[in-house]
Image 1 (cartoon, rainbow, N blue to C red):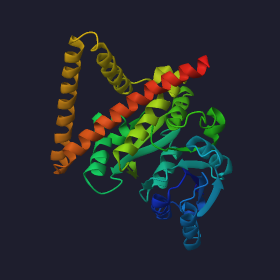
Image 2 (cartoon, helix red, strand yellow; image 1 turned 135 degrees about the vertical axis):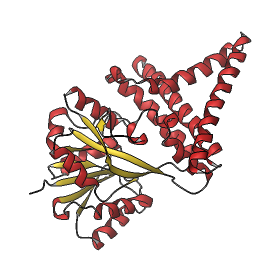
Image 3 (cartoon, rainbow, N blue to C red; image 1 turned 90 degrees about the horizontal axis):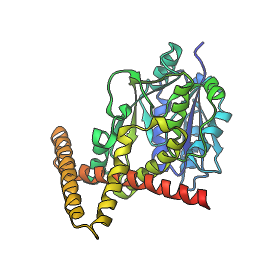
Image 4 (cartoon, rainbow, N blue to C red; image 1 turned 90 degrees about the vertical axis):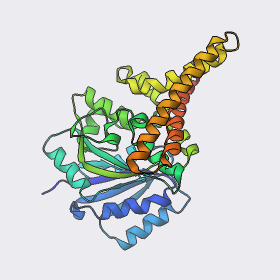
Length: 334
């Protein structure tokens, strides 16, 4: 008998994408009578629940349950869904994702043969809209200059990694290491995986486990996303300082250097020249990466689009990091 599986999904106002996720779940090769879906909804008011209700009416299986998440945060939603879930294995998905038909089957396979305590795969990142900006954002999100060394964005061979997107794990793992940290409004997946590794477990990335991820459609939305990443990464690093990677340190260092040289330039003129040289080198790097993407995809419009996306990611992440440090200092002194 195959193990029972609960797919847990936190969501809030996801009318535009929740249908695609549920359709992808309905197409899973895993037996539907061994599968359920638990959606922790942050009291959506945009038609998300109506979309779920239509799916429930049209597709009796797999069973889909919706529970309220009044706190409206991802980790709170995950924990509520975990408590309501009945499956032996929990598969965490996102309302912006669409897993391939074999997704659950391959997650269960890897867990059953002991490849990892938490297993996941790689993203195929697609634009969140039409036009050169959304396309540039999606391309940048899958490039090393935007993704760093995050293997689930870059792909590669099956291996142990620091983290995977979403992830699948046995229910007993939560009893061993604890639930998702509800004080972290972003980076909760990474922090959960840190505790897995500290507990002696393995986080396993399998490139055969694939899902489509819809990138942000605007630079404003991208800036807000990466500001949150930087803000909550600092809070996570305070708990686990040894997890800092070089790629995560570069954006805060860059932002601090730019601000520092701008301020120094008021009193020391060479600082302006140093800043100009740094920005020139930075623009050369962005241009080279943009041209690389434009040639790879045979789309010249990816050059300016990805350049703007890279800069937005770096500045948003770095600014969020320092804002987090500043507000933490104010919180402690207050």
